[in-house]
Length: 255
Image (cartoon, rainbow, N blue to C red; front, side, top):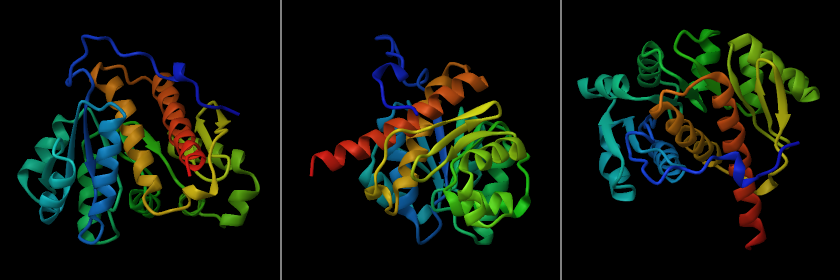
């Protein structure tokens, strides 16, 4: 059972700069879901990403930039999108992605980039439809229903043994990740740990998008230094999940 400690994250050197902090691309936001990528992008910047680009519908540009002027926004259907994805240090795929042909095409573009990718939300739906990931190193962040779809089993069966289910996800998709829910289970291919924070107030739209952004932001710093080995990525995954849940607990205390 892991709880938040400040030493879960190393102190940044005073000489750090935006390129060292990494360039994260967040891909998603179908026409009716621009808020998902906006929340993920803002969370990523607050978690320490040096630069964030959102690849989404061009129609969302003004709304996202008005909210977060630091973010670069690229139309997913333009040639600029492929260039942004190729230049990224890592990718977050899925917030607001949707289940249309547009989302399928964006999923395939990100997968083909062959970079470390955090897959969340409808990115996990697309992953389940395909049955395997053919991109770079993979991080997944499913809730119970998404995990059950990935494992092709009933939700009740998955929930009956969440540790075994987390292990099955790690082995089946050769990944690290978190099985979200009460007692979120963080896992890699060698074991698992349980988050010691969280509360029912987290059961609200957008909470997962924020987590994917926090995780992307913490991983971006590693990516900017070329330090993306599995042990370091798993440590940052644990830090992201625990920080996200501990912040939610603090918010409850402030009510």
